Image 1: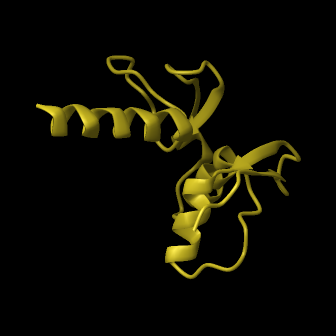
Image 2: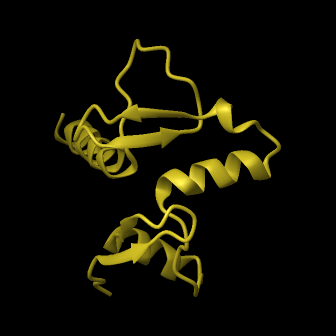
Length: 102
């Protein structure tokens, strides 16, 4: 089934974010019926809090792919690029294509 991207509004920060077709497909496979209520950055914060971690155990960094600010569940050391969810998935797919081609 093909899903069009949806623009949703985060209940925590009121920013708009894209609920991508890939995420929608994942939700469908896992039989999740509710759409996400938080943007990816707020989801990382909520997950850290739920796991009993301090919010400062996460970091806001510029994505090495698109330059947008992304929240990650760790403190980057600066020795490797850090990507937002969208760019990370694209990077992962590109790496998979390269491995298959070799």
